Image (cartoon, rainbow over all chains, first blue to last red; front, side, top):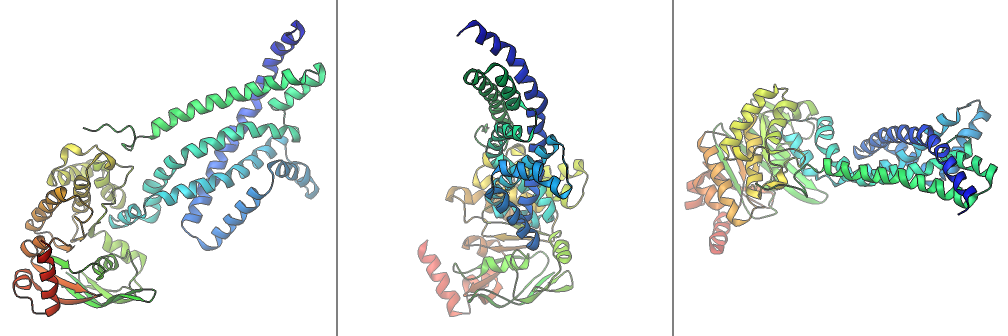
Length: 227
Length: 246
């Protein structure tokens, strides 16, 4: 490796990492949090078989899962101004990523809700609890535990997918790298460098997932201590 | 205190219950026996609204309810005064033993936590599991889980407790501990309606026995009498096959 290349890489590192911390990370965290709310609501509606709302939810999931994320970004950022809706690039990205992830996560959570034995719901009724109380205190907590690994997967995928936001002018890590590359023209080294930073982010999240799973594993499951 | 009148229920074409009527007085321990598929479990589930009956009435504490059109509010009100013990325990997996027992008091009955904890501890003590209060269901044996489930039902001081084959899912060596708890409960004066295959429990512990077959009640009466001198031929046949198995 030449000295010039090395210098470029070292100089670029903070210039890539900073947009990562200022854009990629907030975009991911905010969008994922909203996605979880959407997903939980959509899953609970379907689980409760609320008639019309369930159909709306199925339609939402069908459309979002059936169209590319990149196209969704373009529709919202470049398309909506045609009908007078002009959004800030970051806001547009948050909206698209949360709606997109919400559709996938809703299916994960719905499956997890269905995996909780129906007998526990019946037992809840028999001790006098209401449907809402049973969902909130018995079924949902267990479902979230089951869904946790898949949801973590979704989070890690989203960190990487935020690079697509470069296409709608969000100044995140990938966009920053492209800018630097335009100046020095070292595509292999620079794109590998940003890849490495994405890997770093994912690794931290994977580590956090492990901690989370151990924390959640408190129903006397795998790590149960028998007296 | 509890009366079921002309209860009928079918799943698709299959008639599971046909014009079933029965009566339970305070303090009664009533056993429901009979061959599998006879509708015993469905009967209990209909009375506690886990299944919707096609026809029939429930008289509970002097009030009559139509089972096919009972409101959610009435269901909830009646469930606050009844307990249910399932064949498969159905403890809340995400709650410890004591939390399982407290849930119905704190959440459904809005009792202060301290009072609920005290009552729950006493209930667990009653079933001999005070020292397992902080264990999760997955850390308990089947027999222990069922005893927690009984404590969960007892803690709410119900007017009546329904038992749906409470020992059928248990290994033979664990059946005794559950039956012992039920026997004590019966002696303490609790009103119980018990679907069971344990003939000895039906004969020795229950005061009344109902024999059901093919969705209807064949014979009901004083337990000792029903077992020693059954009136109906079908009851006699059933009791003979049961004792032949022993």
